[in-house]
Length: 609
Image 1 (cartoon, rainbow, N blue to C red):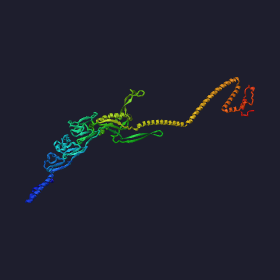
Image 2: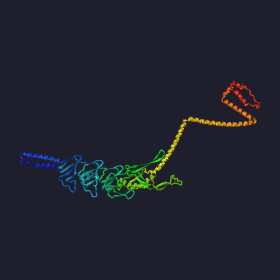
Image 3: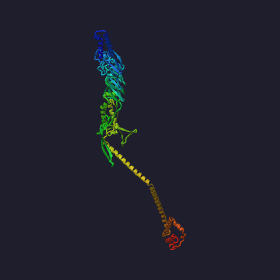
Image 4: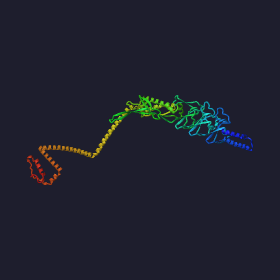
């Protein structure tokens, strides 16, 4: 504006300078022409400075027309036909010349728009055709017009571009756009991680091009009524891809530039998940201790078990045989990609399914099963109480009885199967597949186990006592064997002596028997002799025989006597004459015989005289 005023002043000076100078002589005329020439040059310079512009490579020149144009009408904001106001046309980088460009227009240089990687540009048009009554967002741009609709404001406004929030977005790149027309907001792209799917709730009815989801604008926009997988009354209204509502197909793994204003994406984890119900109870113990005297003592104790981090909820309490028994449970669940839209439409997120549908059902079913009746297969017994065999297998029969606390240990697999059979239909109602249910270690009241534990401990103590006793006996045997080995030589000698004494005893016994037999024979012979010689003669003869036997024994034990006798033969010549007494029947008198032997045995030179 200031340059335009200066230019006008210069023009006036050039036109009216001769009148200001008055009477014109030759010098005055030269001065006038000099003034006019200067005004022309100065005016040209000022005119030229208002008629060109230079735009940098990362800029776009926006024009706001002030003069020489009509006013905008009909609520328009952006001028397409040269009206005053923000212009649809922009000036690209470089040098540009247009008469009085900067005088007629207010020029504003604005930097280009850059959308970084992993983000998208959300667009709002300040001008264009108004949205229809059934629209929340403008119709998306076609593939052929996408770039021109965004970068050419004149094309956008003249080809049906709609005012307001756009469905189409700017993908990562650099754009030279008319910022008088567009408002750009940057948002993060939608990433569907591995093991997840993206369920889309659409706010627009249009064609779709999202990778694996690509379709033209659907004609049928009515909801598809899908019943739950268990065939119950729970239904989920889904729509075809491209309709307004929750689409019946989900986005798979990938990175998508989705307008989060037009499309709400709910990520659903399709991997197998583990829900745990643990902690939140008081665990009691009864410890058994064996005293030095062998007595079993009971020591009670208790422990507070907190709910661990990451657990879905506390342990499930059941009432079995009047006992409150907490049971820790692990549940494996999975949502398939095909069921994910149904889950979102019928319930919400997987957390909603867990908290609002399955956790209450799991608690109720576990209480029902563990506190109800059991259908068991028990063996068929014969009259003697032995199992009946059929084809090499034990024959069984069905039986029904009330569940017991110890069934949590002895029939855990049966209880788990019963819970699974009842909970799976409940999961299918919400589109969730129950893969497995497993019980943790049951928290059985210790009073029910202490009798069995005492019995087991007593048995173990008895076995330990028997083993210790056997070990002690073995130790005694070992010590005895060791002592025996140490005294082996003495034992051998004693054993030999025992054997010798036994042999001597046997020999003596044999000698006695022989002597007995001998004496018996002698007695018979003597009896016969007595019958011939008479008893007195037989007695004398026996005495003589005994004497001779003793002499021979003496000589046998002392041979030196015989040697001495032979070395003195004169001893065999009797010096004394002994006569037989005729009165005695010519027999040898014992005294006389003794005298003879006395002489024989007497010392040499000193015999009887």
